[in-house]
Image (cartoon, rainbow, N blue to C red; front, side, top):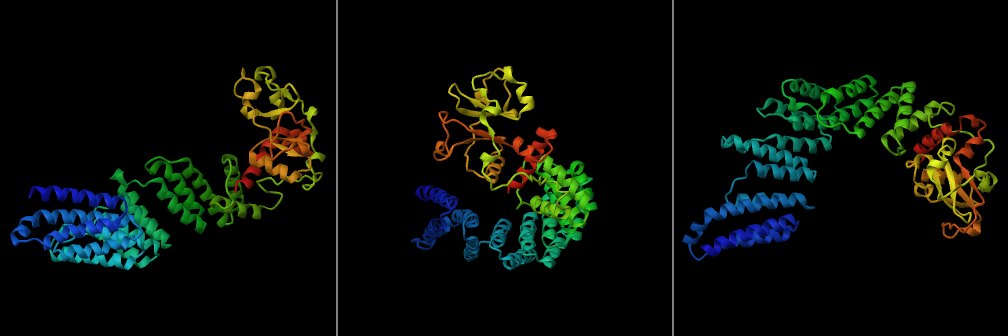
Amino acid sequence: MVSWDSGKYEMRLRVLRDEEDGDMRRANALVARFRKVLYEGHSVLLYNLLMKEVTTVITFSQLNILQGYIKSNFPLGALTVKDEILRQGLKPDRLTYNTIIYACVKSAEIDKAIQFLEDMKEEANRESNPELLPDAFTYTTLLKGIGNSQDLYSVLKIVVEMKSSLLSIDRTAYTAMIDALLACGSIDGALCIFGDMIKQAGNNKDLRPKPHLYLSIMRAFATRGDVDMVMRLSERMWPDSVGFISRAAKEEAHELLMEAAINNNQIDLARGLLRRIVNEKECFSWTSRVGLVAVKVESLSGFTNSLLRPYVFPQVILNDPVEKYMVPFQESRPLPADLALRKVVLRFMKDRAVPLVDDWGGCVGIVHRDDCTKLDAPLLSMSRGPLCVPTSTTVEHVIDLLLREKSEMVVVVKSGNMYEGSYTSSSRPLGIFSLTILWSFIGDYSSGPDAVTTLKQGAEACNCG
């Protein structure tokens, strides 16, 4: 008996190990070998002596195999384990049913999941066993699956059943109900449950919703164009929600308000919100939610009212070579690379970027105003490697390069000085081209650096997608 007991625990560990590794074939084989001992014993006495211990081990192993199937690519395999439990005369408990229902939902077999729910309740009533009744996990799992299938009738049926039972509905259960109703397009139903949740939260702080639930409801109202509801939900999210409100959540709240405004034809409000978003965000993708709404705002605003400022440069032809518009390198007044920032700090009050040269006159870097952080450090330590383009490069390509690299300036060199895009200090630069130079062609150079910053921010937003 001692050898069997040690083998029992070794078998249990091996089943668990294979289940965690996702090797369900080996785990099932081990359980099959384990079960075979019962039926091939040499006496009834041995069978009777082992039955109590074996029953416990089989149940433990099978529950872990159920969990293994959930993690695998074949979650419905968990159903076969339930049949095996029944064949051995064991009775599934709530954990077993919940695991099987989760497997059905994961496999999008919603009808089977609902049938197991009914079996669960029927067996609980038949045996007068309240421990078999569905719990919050059972219902929330079902709601997620039914919501994804957009079966509003079944969602409402589950919600009514939850509300009419003795089940303690926590924040997770409330959130699952609201998400399922929203997925089915029942915004009014979701708002009704949300109102009940807020009311109950007055007596139970654990029911206070998290920020993501506010955002879920706001998305639905934004699509409908209900600016008032989106604004009210946005205002109440700060005092009434629980948990940390991330920067991304704050940004999305503003974006949803803009979306609601544009869907309600409130162009001026949408334009004002877009201006705020463009000023606060480094960039956004045109394929994102805010990007798609920004396209609508831009198209409805017209060319003259565009927030992304599509400046017109009548004197610049994008297909022209950059050599035509560059400034000779010496006229850019480059600085020695080993010079300390303290000695030339006033230079950066005027110029946003300055090229650096070594003792041989080669360009070794470009210092941007934003990178000047140490007064006693040499300029070279704060510089960026020079972006170099040959003289034949088009202006359009150079502008794209500046915006993509978030740089103020490129160095123009002869085509023969370029080797696979690299540049060495021994190559003499011919000139420079910068956003400040580009801005001068608009005819209003007085606003210079600030206008260049505005141009760059607007253009970066355009190019981040």
